[in-house]
Amino acid sequence: MNNEKREEMFRRLKAANPEPKTELEYNNAFELLIAVILSAQATDVSVNKATQRLYPVANTPEAIYKLGVKGLTPYIRTIGLFNTKAKNVIEACRMLCELHDGQVPQDREKLEALPGVGRKTANVVLNTAFRQIAMAVDTHIFRVSNRTGLAPGKNVLQVEKQLLKFVPKDYLLDAHHWLILHGRYVCLARTPKCPECSISDLCDFKPKTAAKVKKPVGSSGPAKLAARTTKKRSTEGRKKSSAKKTASNTKKKKTKLLAKKATKKKAVAKAVFKKRS
Ligand code: SF4
Image (tube, rainbow, N blue to C red; front, side, top):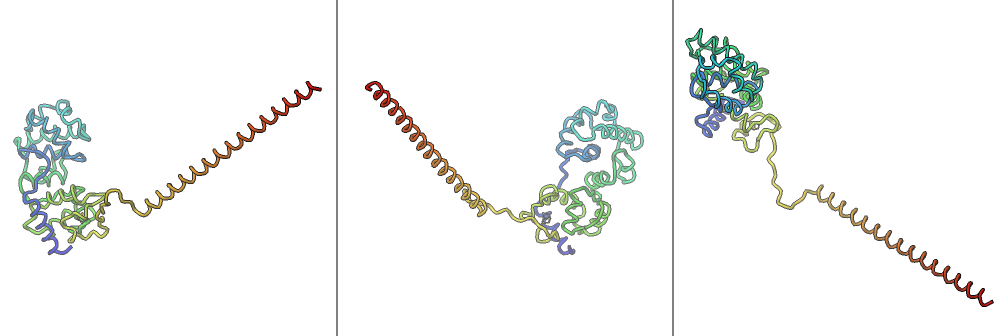
């Protein structure tokens, strides 16, 4: 993908969604940090359900730290890896209280020093909460960047660096959200929705998925038609042969009955003859 196409790609993504946002629910940097820690290998929907219960009860480092692992676990039990996440969140809250005066640091190194916070989480917080230019490469962004040819790379770090290099400056701040949403809803992992993709003509991905052809109601493909005809014929054939069998059985029964009657008649005639003589 060349620079002209990259520019056009983001122009279209922006036109469709001028202010892209994360789907995680939060009201401040701390709530976002905790939501992102919880979201590792979990859906945003499941995290939102948990934080909707947790934040009204505790939404500061002090309050969550006071809950302790035991007190926090019931709120996040529905999220994958909740045991490890509970320990990380409590320890992160302790560090925020003791080292950062209860504030979320706006610095990558300090963020990454918190338990449960890796490069990706730090990038999300820096970009989304503090509006710094940072590219959090998750599975969706990795796939879209490689498929489209926007920023190909063998691993997430390579893709991150390529994105920072190739995404046009005007779009750098929100590129992360546009790419995540595009990967989540259009450029799906198994079957990308190429026919309805707004950047299809700019994308380098060659084996694009084909548009689905809608069949008129009641119509059948040639194979289906042939199969139906064969089935119909074989059913008719079975009916005919069964009718033949029934007819021949009836005939046999009649012959037997006639033979029986004849034998009976003969026996009666013999008896009469014997009596007379
Ligand atoms: S055209 Fe297909 S592969 Fe390319 S970005 Fe769109 S959905 Fe993804």
